[in-house]
Image 1: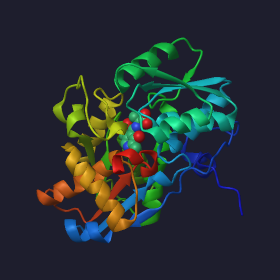
Image 2: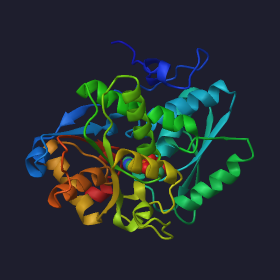
Image 3: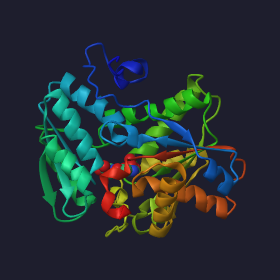
Length: 329
Ligand code: F0G
């Protein structure tokens, strides 16, 4: 069997890499884009596609950005990477650091991380630091530690992360031969919506697509700072991956929303869990609760007749359900 083509190699001409950037890879990207007949029937949208990012090597979309961030850290002579995380960024950072021979430390909100993600980070050899408080407090600590220059911070405040993650938009345009009318995506720290928008803008500018989609972002109702327009002090939701009260890429999300004529809306935990189990039963796809927010949002828009002019939609399923089986049970 052929070795996997690294994401860095595949998109070298569209990423901030040089011939000296190490082509590390765990086989990230090139994830399935699957059609969902039941969602088409239910929503009345002609084509509903699911981008299955849980098929990435560590089980989430984070691998796209992490491979670039870790390769650039290596190129720049770093010896150690550091991040705050609700779990997936930590698992991804730990895996790529292991692959690259770098040390890794992750700062996690104590008691709020799905067991599968914590286990991944530990087994990949990361140093795990638990903080009292939530993700926002963990990120504040990482910003402080990162300022000392001893560690390279690989949260999405590291621009290489956003660059790597934009490749998912390229893949969607390549698969469909065009950009969709709308993209539905869960929003937590808001790096991914920022990255997809950049990817679609670049795809249109380079002739890969003739249009740009409306960006429809969805937050959990108990953790919806972008919907309220103000930080949330005590974010709460069953979708622990997006339990974030003060997203780092706030402005990027607002820009994506406004420049695309899109929206950022809230979905309830009940709507999230309903979409989560429906995706499993009707499509055979087990995603994370946070991922299901994208589909919950699409269904809500269909119910409220807010999908005018949308013929082709892509929902981003950001992570693999096996990371968090406790929620399913
Ligand atoms: N879905 C999943 C499964 C996630 O893990 C995250 C973020 C998101 C959606 C939201 O993406 O933050 O770019 O808006 N997880 C981060 C982490 C915060 O630490 O793993 P975002």
